[in-house]
Amino acid sequence: MNRRNLIVTLTLSALFCTLICISSFIRIPMPNMMPVTLQTFFVLLTGLVLPLKASTLAITTYIALGLIGLPIFSGGGGLGYVLLPNFGFIIGFLIATVIISVITQKLNYSKLWQYIVISLLGIAVIYIIGVLYFAFITNIHNNNDYSWVWFIQTVFLPFLPKEIICTILASLSAYKIRPYITKLS
Image (tube, rainbow, N blue to C red; front, side, top):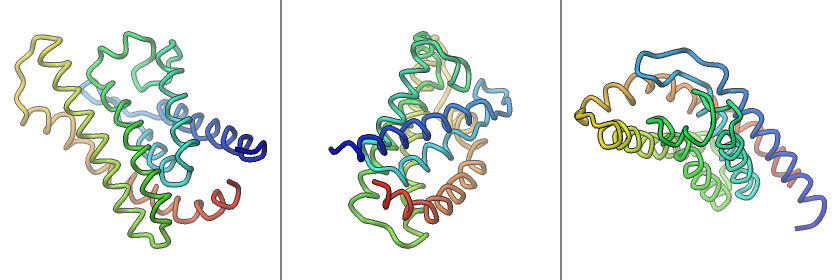
Protein backbone atom coordinates (compact mmCIF):
# COMPACT_ATOMS: atom_id res chain seq x y z
CA MET A 1 0.00 0.00 0.00
CA ASN A 2 1.52 3.32 -1.03
CA ARG A 3 1.56 6.41 1.16
CA ARG A 4 -1.44 8.07 -0.53
CA ASN A 5 -3.61 4.94 -0.21
CA LEU A 6 -2.60 4.59 3.44
CA ILE A 7 -3.59 8.19 4.17
CA VAL A 8 -6.91 7.78 2.35
CA THR A 9 -7.65 4.49 4.16
CA LEU A 10 -6.85 5.93 7.58
CA THR A 11 -8.82 9.12 6.92
CA LEU A 12 -11.92 7.31 5.66
CA SER A 13 -11.72 4.80 8.51
CA ALA A 14 -11.50 7.60 11.08
CA LEU A 15 -14.38 9.48 9.46
CA PHE A 16 -16.71 6.48 9.41
CA CYS A 17 -15.68 5.38 12.92
CA THR A 18 -16.57 8.89 14.10
CA LEU A 19 -19.94 8.75 12.33
CA ILE A 20 -20.76 5.43 14.00
CA CYS A 21 -19.72 6.83 17.39
CA ILE A 22 -21.90 9.92 16.95
CA SER A 23 -24.83 7.84 15.75
CA SER A 24 -24.88 5.90 19.02
CA PHE A 25 -25.78 9.13 20.83
CA ILE A 26 -28.84 9.68 18.63
CA ARG A 27 -31.15 7.32 20.46
CA ILE A 28 -34.72 6.70 21.46
CA PRO A 29 -35.03 4.64 24.68
CA MET A 30 -36.94 1.38 24.46
CA PRO A 31 -38.31 -0.71 27.34
CA ASN A 32 -36.21 -3.81 26.49
CA MET A 33 -32.79 -2.26 27.32
CA MET A 34 -31.91 -1.58 23.67
CA PRO A 35 -32.47 1.94 22.40
CA VAL A 36 -33.22 2.78 18.79
CA THR A 37 -30.08 4.35 17.28
CA LEU A 38 -28.73 5.24 13.85
CA GLN A 39 -25.75 2.92 14.20
CA THR A 40 -26.96 0.34 11.69
CA PHE A 41 -27.35 3.07 9.06
CA PHE A 42 -23.69 4.06 9.38
CA VAL A 43 -22.50 0.46 9.73
CA LEU A 44 -24.25 -0.43 6.47
CA LEU A 45 -22.90 2.70 4.78
CA THR A 46 -19.38 1.87 5.98
CA GLY A 47 -19.52 -1.58 4.42
CA LEU A 48 -21.15 -0.37 1.22
CA VAL A 49 -18.78 2.48 0.38
CA LEU A 50 -15.41 1.68 1.95
CA PRO A 51 -12.90 -0.90 0.78
CA LEU A 52 -12.47 -3.94 3.05
CA LYS A 53 -9.38 -2.67 4.92
CA ALA A 54 -10.89 0.75 5.61
CA SER A 55 -14.30 -0.57 6.67
CA THR A 56 -12.80 -3.24 8.92
CA LEU A 57 -10.47 -0.69 10.49
CA ALA A 58 -13.39 1.70 11.12
CA ILE A 59 -15.53 -0.90 12.90
CA THR A 60 -12.62 -2.49 14.77
CA THR A 61 -11.54 0.94 16.03
CA TYR A 62 -15.09 1.69 17.14
CA ILE A 63 -15.27 -1.58 19.09
CA ALA A 64 -11.81 -1.12 20.62
CA LEU A 65 -12.59 2.44 21.74
CA GLY A 66 -15.83 1.28 23.32
CA LEU A 67 -14.20 -1.66 25.09
CA ILE A 68 -11.43 0.47 26.58
CA GLY A 69 -14.07 2.60 28.26
CA LEU A 70 -15.24 5.39 25.99
CA PRO A 71 -19.04 5.56 26.31
CA ILE A 72 -19.66 5.21 22.56
CA PHE A 73 -21.85 2.11 22.57
CA SER A 74 -25.58 2.72 22.81
CA GLY A 75 -25.47 1.85 26.52
CA GLY A 76 -22.02 3.12 27.52
CA GLY A 77 -18.66 1.42 27.20
CA GLY A 78 -16.00 -0.59 28.96
CA LEU A 79 -14.90 -4.21 28.98
CA GLY A 80 -17.92 -5.22 31.07
CA TYR A 81 -20.12 -4.30 28.10
CA VAL A 82 -19.28 -7.74 26.69
CA LEU A 83 -21.62 -9.23 29.31
CA LEU A 84 -24.57 -7.07 28.28
CA PRO A 85 -27.15 -8.75 26.04
CA ASN A 86 -26.90 -6.17 23.26
CA PHE A 87 -23.13 -6.57 22.75
CA GLY A 88 -23.94 -9.23 20.16
CA PHE A 89 -25.15 -6.50 17.84
CA ILE A 90 -21.73 -4.86 18.02
CA ILE A 91 -20.11 -8.17 17.07
CA GLY A 92 -22.66 -8.35 14.25
CA PHE A 93 -21.57 -4.88 13.07
CA LEU A 94 -18.04 -6.16 12.45
CA ILE A 95 -19.06 -9.38 10.71
CA ALA A 96 -21.73 -7.67 8.60
CA THR A 97 -19.32 -4.92 7.54
CA VAL A 98 -16.71 -7.44 6.43
CA ILE A 99 -19.28 -9.45 4.44
CA ILE A 100 -20.77 -6.32 2.85
CA SER A 101 -17.34 -4.94 1.91
CA VAL A 102 -16.14 -8.22 0.41
CA ILE A 103 -19.27 -8.65 -1.69
CA THR A 104 -19.32 -5.00 -2.74
CA GLN A 105 -15.68 -5.13 -3.88
CA LYS A 106 -16.23 -8.32 -5.88
CA LEU A 107 -19.45 -7.30 -7.62
CA ASN A 108 -18.78 -3.59 -8.24
CA TYR A 109 -22.45 -2.61 -7.90
CA SER A 110 -23.98 -0.15 -10.28
CA LYS A 111 -27.69 -0.60 -9.56
CA LEU A 112 -29.61 0.60 -6.53
CA TRP A 113 -31.40 -2.71 -5.97
CA GLN A 114 -28.02 -4.42 -5.53
CA TYR A 115 -27.16 -2.06 -2.69
CA ILE A 116 -30.53 -2.77 -1.09
CA VAL A 117 -30.06 -6.56 -1.30
CA ILE A 118 -26.59 -6.46 0.23
CA SER A 119 -27.84 -4.09 2.96
CA LEU A 120 -30.63 -6.52 3.80
CA LEU A 121 -28.02 -9.28 4.05
CA GLY A 122 -26.04 -7.06 6.42
CA ILE A 123 -29.12 -6.42 8.59
CA ALA A 124 -29.81 -10.17 8.66
CA VAL A 125 -26.25 -10.89 9.83
CA ILE A 126 -26.41 -8.18 12.52
CA TYR A 127 -29.74 -9.44 13.86
CA ILE A 128 -28.93 -13.15 13.73
CA ILE A 129 -25.75 -12.61 15.75
CA GLY A 130 -27.38 -9.96 17.94
CA VAL A 131 -30.47 -11.97 18.84
CA LEU A 132 -28.47 -15.17 19.46
CA TYR A 133 -26.05 -13.31 21.75
CA PHE A 134 -28.94 -11.53 23.47
CA ALA A 135 -30.62 -14.89 24.09
CA PHE A 136 -27.39 -16.48 25.34
CA ILE A 137 -26.61 -13.70 27.82
CA THR A 138 -30.21 -13.33 28.94
CA ASN A 139 -31.02 -17.03 29.38
CA ILE A 140 -27.68 -18.68 30.16
CA HIS A 141 -25.60 -16.01 31.85
CA ASN A 142 -28.46 -14.24 33.65
CA ASN A 143 -30.41 -17.46 34.43
CA ASN A 144 -33.66 -16.57 32.68
CA ASP A 145 -35.94 -18.79 30.64
CA TYR A 146 -37.36 -16.68 27.83
CA SER A 147 -38.61 -18.34 24.64
CA TRP A 148 -37.37 -17.67 21.13
CA VAL A 149 -40.73 -16.07 20.39
CA TRP A 150 -40.09 -13.58 23.20
CA PHE A 151 -36.67 -12.70 21.76
CA ILE A 152 -38.08 -12.21 18.26
CA GLN A 153 -40.93 -10.07 19.59
CA THR A 154 -38.71 -8.04 21.90
CA VAL A 155 -35.33 -7.77 20.19
CA PHE A 156 -36.16 -7.96 16.48
CA LEU A 157 -39.71 -6.97 15.51
CA PRO A 158 -39.84 -3.54 17.22
CA PHE A 159 -36.73 -2.51 15.29
CA LEU A 160 -37.71 -3.90 11.88
CA PRO A 161 -39.37 -0.71 10.52
CA LYS A 162 -36.34 1.37 11.48
CA GLU A 163 -33.98 -1.15 9.89
CA ILE A 164 -35.95 -1.14 6.62
CA ILE A 165 -35.69 2.66 6.54
CA CYS A 166 -31.95 2.47 7.36
CA THR A 167 -31.46 -0.09 4.59
CA ILE A 168 -33.12 2.12 2.02
CA LEU A 169 -31.35 5.30 3.14
CA ALA A 170 -27.92 3.64 3.40
CA SER A 171 -28.39 2.07 -0.03
CA LEU A 172 -29.42 5.37 -1.60
CA SER A 173 -26.51 7.15 0.06
CA ALA A 174 -24.01 4.50 -0.99
CA TYR A 175 -25.33 4.51 -4.53
CA LYS A 176 -24.54 8.22 -4.73
CA ILE A 177 -21.34 8.32 -2.62
CA ARG A 178 -19.48 5.14 -3.62
CA PRO A 179 -18.28 6.36 -7.05
CA TYR A 180 -16.52 9.30 -5.37
CA ILE A 181 -14.92 7.20 -2.63
CA THR A 182 -13.80 4.63 -5.20
CA LYS A 183 -11.93 7.40 -7.03
CA LEU A 184 -10.16 8.36 -3.80
CA SER A 185 -8.84 4.90 -3.03
